[in-house]
Amino acid sequence: MGAFLLSFDLGTSSERAVLFDRRLNVAGIEQSEFPQHYPLPGHVEQNPEDIWETQLRITRKLLRERNLPAKDIAGIGISNQRETAIVWDRRSGKPVYPAIVWQDKRTSGLCEKLKADGLSGNIKSKTGLVIDAYFSATKIHWILENVPGARERAEGGELCFGTVDSWILWKLTGGKLHITDFSNASRTMLYNIHELKWDRELLEIFNIPASMLPEVRPSSECYGETLPEWFGGAIPVCGIAGDQQAALFGQDCLDAGTAKNTYGTGCFVLMNTGREAKISRHGLLTTIAWGIGGTVTYALEGSVFVAGAAVRWLRDNLHIIKTAADSEAAAASLKDNGGVYFVPAFSGLGAPYWDMDARGTLSGLTQGSTAKHIVRAALESIAYQCRDVLDAMERDSGVGLTALNADGGATENDFLMQFQADLLNCPVRRTSVRESTALGAARIAGLACGFRTSRDTGTGSGKFTCFHPKMGEAERERLYAGWLRAVKRARSS
Image (cartoon, rainbow, N blue to C red):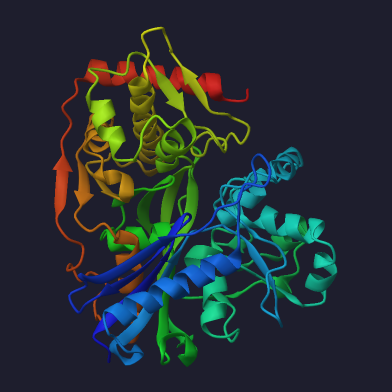
């Protein structure tokens, strides 16, 4: 058996190839951004070939620079941006349209019609999801309705649908495997998470042929091997999980009641609920965390659409910071937010509001407001949105949060982590492992290929830096009340 595991971390704006050694420590990493496309307001697309070619290039570079032949890799684990929909020709392997990214809002009108038709309860009871353009089903429907000839080809069995994991595995195996795992299937709004199958009634509602869909397999399994031509030899692919579920596994949140938050382009809070699929009463999602060893584990999830993306907006659109790291010093230089609140609803609001028509707002501006106040408000908005989600999670689960495990690029910002701890009034534990998502995928893959023999290996998860709350109760609730007023102004109704 090879001495390393290889993770593909297929993110929304960048991709990583990460090597892990026997102790699940990072032994090498390559990363590259890839292009995003915004053809119309609310539309977010990617070229599926860019996704594949970027991952292939950085993986080859990693193996070449480490002088590792394919036989030294015990297996590949895949974690991926979820919900993004790709449709391609079964014979040629060519996409029929760009990938429609999870952030895309072009199908908001269809979602509103489905709600008006009274389908919200039925869809949520089967899938654990709310009706929203975020998920894959309406994106597939849009492609079939708007790409010339696509519906006829799909009904003739000529087209495949897949989330990014399916697309990459198809490419890795030369079209031999068209599969996904439980965690990604549960994000499509087409999968019955209780019966563990594609739901015939939902396929009829969205008018999607069942022949397009991938086979759903466990998250940890040796599915097949890569073509030898990609990496100089065949490598087993042994694990798949959506990026947030992989991070949950990588953060050791393996028991019911444990929770993590990934601070990336968006924020994703997940709480492991064990073998029980808890249907939320407070705007959260019920999702499959993973399926391993014949057991399916469920989670509650709250999604914040814009987190790190708000800081990138300050840098790339407003040009008031030069780097994302500059935001920390700017925010910390002020004694408070000056009454300024920023609601970054660029793509609507996610949990617990699910308001697709909400739009970004800056409120509380005075003549004394400066660029630094806007920067601070952007960072604070990330923490406020996470509190919205975690408050709802506590109400749904009946369990009070005692600590929050945190990972993702934005956790490097000490101001944000301290403000988050203050706002939640509980410790925030930042992992020293910056690659929790990749680590989770590696651990899941390692179980299947025999690289590791226990799910809770302990090694690889690293040490934590703990941020303890310092803010008084009155100040915390005063600030949060101001946030809730700002959200009310940003909402569509």
